[in-house]
Structures are given as structure tokens and as C-alpha cells.
Length: 87
Image 1: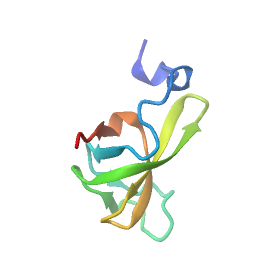
Image 2: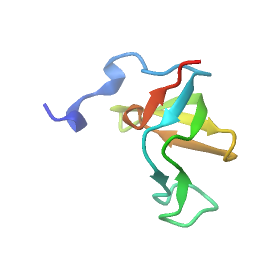
Image 3: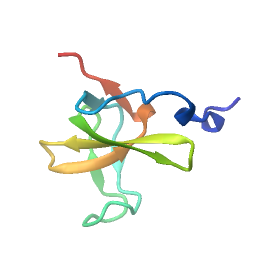
Image 4: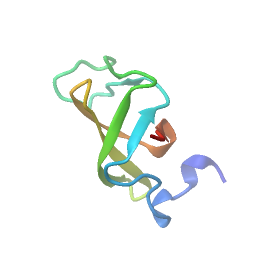
């Protein structure tokens, strides 16, 4: 089964509210982030933030609203784009 066919929401979310996470990749605006042009860099690989919300997309994927405090941005990200930061 391809990864995109896996239904993540059949399991518990990988990250919880308030957890400190790091972006595993650069995130660019796909047109869903208001106040920024399509293609603009929103989050850089290695930026650290905190899970502020957990939603779903297409009844298949969890979307984590991550508050990147230093950037002043809240960005929706998939679990595969994040890693847990151990304190």
C-alpha cells in the first residue's frame, strides 16, 4: 500500500497539544497562507514550534497547527514533515 493510501486518522495522532516539534523540511506557501505570496518560504528546515491544534484533511490525514513562535506564524503541517524535539 502506498503511503498516500494510508488513513492516518484510524490511529491516534502522532503528536499532542503543546509538544515541541521541529520542521524536517522547508515549507512554502501553497496558496493557503493569507498575507504571503504563493511560493514564499514560510518555515525553514529546523525551525522549532509547538503543536497548537490537531485537525484532519480529506478524512485521511492529521494536520497539526504548529505555532512557530520565533517566526510569528501558525502553519498546518503533516506528521511526516515534523519530528519531536526532546528537551
